[in-house]
Image (spheres, one colour):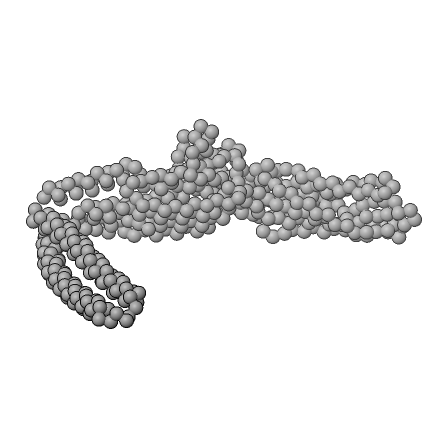
Length: 440
């Protein structure tokens, strides 16, 4: 009963800690000089317009002296496309919010512009596992032009000029200057003004801002929605007076921020997969099982753990008894091994005695042969005394060698017997100590 109350108290404490610490995985705040610590920084996306203007002109030169006489606009076209850039008015920092009861895996990436491109977060509330241990846009083209009068007096050439403008819609309406200057080698110079102005039908409200204050803390990440904008281009060339180009483009709304919460799930594993392109969200996958199911598993696992405690104790006792029996069996085996070793030592001793007996027999035989030889020497004086002495010396050497072999054999056998006895005594002492420990 005390064990159950203790585990329930641990569950309650951990749940309260998880609740008060909050479930957010990351938080977004403003990056400032006095608080520069961050796991990663990022910018909010901002839309720019890339306007590509192409102008075709007639260039008139004198047929006689090739002097530049005039230039005239034929047509001017405007192509547009969206370009996403970082909003450098503010830098945001993203910090991981630690929770000791959760297993978290974060993978957050930004591109070279500092815009978010990937957010993969997997969180798993480990509280149930802890409890169980205790008990996852179209182009617009304007074209006007005709051969100038008096073309027979001039050489006429067609030239094309292109210029790219990167424009911030927050600056609209805005005039864009573009002057084409033509010169010849005689010092003649003629300028052609083909500037234009661009307007927005829904310019950003200067009184509305989406900049975070230094005190704001966002539990998750920030992004911006796309808004449809209408733009108008008014060429300033005289021959295009009264003409305009209109087009529509989706751009990030700098007046509105979207908070994407990234939170943990209590008692469950939660997976967030966000796909962003230049800081604009394209896909958000959330995989979260039932938190109630995870919570219900806690008392079940707890009950299993409590019920299994006596069985674990009983199993421990059985294992201990089995281990004691195994030690006793090993001890008997060792004693049998000692008896077998002693028997082998006795056989070796008998074999040594037999070898000694054979050596003694050989020695006696040699001694007899020596005595016979000496008698022959006495009876046969005709045999050279020198040869007899050589034979005697040879026989004496053989006798000495055989005597030394017998001595070495005896000493070697004694040393081997002593080593075997010491080793057996050590093994017996070790087994006795292990048996005494088990009996205690």
